[in-house]
Structures are given as structure tokens and as C-alpha cells.
Amino acid sequence: MNSYDVAVIGSGPGGYVAAIRCAQLGMKTAIIEKYSTLGGTCLNVGCIPSKALLSSSHHYEEATNHFEEHGIEIPGEIKVNLEKMIARKQAVVDQTTGGIDFLMKKNNIDVYEGLGSFKDATHIKIEGKDAGEIEAKNIIIATGSKPSNLPFITLDKERIITSTEALKLKEVPKHLIIIGGGVIGLELGQVYRRLGAKVTVIEYMDRILPTMDAGLSKELNKVFKKAKFNIMVSHKVQSVERKGDEVIVKAENKKGEVVEFKGDYCLVSVGRRPYTDGLNVEAAGVKLNNRGQVEVNEHLQTNVSNIYAIGDVVRGAMLAHKAEEEGVFVAETLAGQKPHIDYNLIPGVVYTWPEVAAVGKTEEELKETGTEYKVGQFPFRALGRARASGDIDGFVKILADKTTDEVLGVHMIGARCADLIAEAVTAMEFRASAEDISRYSHAHPTFAEAVKEAALAATDDRALHV
Image (cartoon, rainbow, N blue to C red; front, side, top):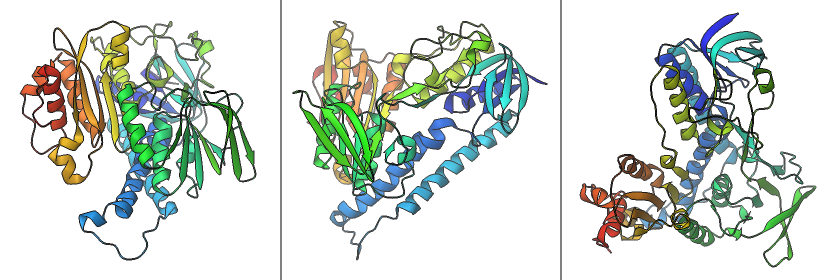
């Protein structure tokens, strides 16, 4: 039986990063993955493939709707070859997961393909290609999450689908009905809307992106309405039924009336649930909470001292980069270091176009706690760079403490916001004030100037270009 200092169960962003960091710190490390490719949901059926399709569909939209205004004329009809688009997506996935294989070899990490389950607190049974048993002094649970469903919906994975199936459709839907106006539903909705599908989004809450700052929801709603999305908020889905190639969704609106929607595909996108199926945590004595999450303390340690858990399977936001931070945190904790994660400064991003990104507190949260704050907001349409590229939707909003001027939250929607949010995270890690951000130079012309201008507005209402 092979013995290790650390064994990681699950090879998503949390798991493989934890394994790499453990190996870097001199620990003999193994990683167990039940699928034939490494990378978990994110690399195989989540973050990476969805971004590939968002990128491809964005190119198509630019070619059909915007090239002409740039003086680019393409004779004849511009067509979508969905099969080729999906094949490109898969090539990106294959290249990325192959990169994880390389990283495992480079760091001398033993990879076991098969379902890992606890025999006891230090032994893991593996069923599958590399069947057997291994021993580890420390074990990290990184088994991630799976798409959630509503109890009355039967997912046939053909017409009533999850995000996994939506990434490999054989045709562009005529009418795609999306249940859930969160990140995943909106991103995939935009892919198929660009490709010509009619898209209806049905959201239970009173706005799309209900967990983000209300100003961001309002702005993205405006952009999506302009793109002819049918967005139905405050609608409670009651039933989803398939009849041949048609899917019928019934929902109750805020007036109590039952409304019917008919489409050829229905994407159920109502969040994700922690995944511990087959892990046999009971054999190790590890406790789960009533939401199915592995219970951990502030060190991400379970109630069994040598077993840790990270990522989607524990409390907190289900984000790949949060899982990565936790993977590094546990590895460094095992090495006797004193790592730190500020969960308030884990950014959230929606990869629609315009992109949506945020870090820190929302206005709603600050109001709830009675925190006095000031707001600085700057529109992208006032930027020369935004006008040059035609990306004028959106804004940057900075929330700062009314007394100290410390930045408490940054919320943005617009071009390249997925990248711009890193500036806000850096500033807030160093407890910057709005004036601090306003005082350092931002290259001109850039989208990043919107951050400086919003900081000027928050400092003393002195933005320069509005």
C-alpha cells in the first residue's frame, strides 16, 4: 500500500492547487479523481468551456452587428457552425486539462483515477481504473459541487437540461427557457441569444443577479432587454413538462396568476449543491451540516483533526478562485505556516458582455449594518477608450466609509470588468481609501480610468470627466 503525507480527493481548482502547493512544500502527495480528465467541473463543464462559447458567440455577434460600423464589410451570409464552435470549445478544454496533467507530473504528484472513498480517517479506497487502497497522514476533501434541481423537475438531459448539457447542444434552440437568473443562466443565455435563440429567463427573486449590488442587476437587465431577452422576475416556477420536442413551463407571477411558457429547451440553473456522493465520510467520522456541506473550522479542518475540506463542498461562495485560495491555505497550514484568507475580498464575476464584477460590501449590506458610507460612480460612456471600442454600457461604483474614506466595496459592470476588479481587490487588501486610488496614475486611454474617476467621485465628488 502506498503511503502519503497528503491525499487530495477531487482535482478541481481547489484540489489540484492544494496538491501542487503541498508538493512545493515538500510533502509526498497524491490526488484522486473519479473522471478520466483532471480539472473538475470548472475546467471540464464549467468556467473554461462556458468562456470559450461566450468568446465564440461574441465574435459572431460582433461580425453580424458591429463590423459594418467599423468599416468592415463581409459579403454574403455569416453563418453559425455550432458543431465547429462546440469542437473548438472542447479543444480548449482538452488543452487546459492536459496542462493539469503536466503540472501533476512536474510536481511529482501521484494521480489515481477512480472514485475515492474513506475506509477510515487515514485510508482511502479507490474504485475504478486505479483500484486499490492508499494511506495518508492528512486528507483534503475537494469534491466540489453538482447542479441543483427543483424537486418537481425531472431532468431528462435532452430537452430539460443543466449547464453541463447546455455546453454541448447539437442545435441552437428556437426558444431557450432558463429557470434562474443567476450567473450560469445569464452567461449561457447570452451565448444562445447571440446565436439566434429566443431566450426567456424566469427568476424567483425580484431581480436578476439577486445576490449582487442592485445597481449592477438594473444595468445588466437594461442591456439584456435591449438585446431582446425576455426577463420574468418575481415568478415562481410550478411545473416543467416535456411533450415531444416541446417543453412547457408554468410559473406563478407576483399577482398570483399562472403564466405558461413554451420552448424547445429548458435550462434549469438554480444553483449548485455540495457533492459528497460515494465519499463515505461516515467511515472517517466527518460531519456534514444540514445543507450537505462538510463542516469545517476557521482552519478548514473538519471535526477529524487530520481531514480538511475546501471549495464548493464547504461553506461560502462556490467560486473556483475561492477554492484555490483555500487549497493553498490548507497546504500552508499543514506545513506549519500561518496563511490568511479575507473572504470579504474574494471577488465575484459574471462573464456576460458587459462583464459584471464586485468585491466587498454591497449598498444593501452597508444599509443593513447601519454603516455610513459615500458613493462614487462613473459611467463607461464618458471614457474615450470605451467610445473608441464601442463598449459604452456600464459603470464603476465605489463605496467608501463616510468618516475614514476606506473603500468598503467596489461594484462594476462594463468592458473588461472581470480583469479590472483585481485593482479593487489589491486596494482593499491594503485598506486603501478612495483618495488613495484616485491619486495613483492610470494610463490613458484605458477602461481602468473608470476606477480612478469613481474614486475621485467617492473622495469629494470631484470626477474630472463628467
